[in-house]
View 1 (tube, rainbow, N blue to C red):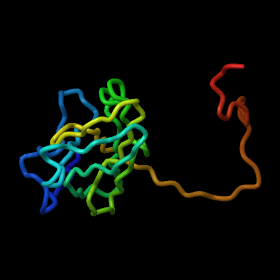
View 2 (view 1 turned 90 degrees about the horizontal axis):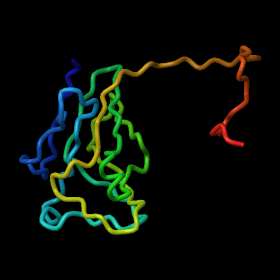
View 3 (view 1 turned 90 degrees about the vertical axis):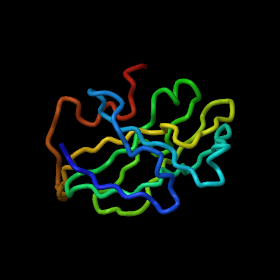
Length: 154
């Protein structure tokens, strides 16, 4: 188990739970909207095709060699067409600023994001760092350069 340190923004509602796993086998910890005081009663309206940075009121300290991926929630996507613009978003181990969720409404109707609502999932994962090196040629494979952007359909 990896330990991630969490601090809450001064303005954030301390009653909104920290990220947590909804079940014993869940891969992602739920992130919740932690709205500004003036938005808590009404929520944030996400109009069709609009995007918005929804605050979670938290900052994270990840161990070296890890990242936190921010992914959409399938229920919001299925029911409302709401997803994340930059899915998955990445929180780097050396970032200490506030985290928000960049949401977009691809559905036909406005959607209200309620204070405390589960809006995304956080996956903490190890990161392999690579050294990129110039080469005169690349090794041959059966696939080669074929299939870029292909779905396998004609």
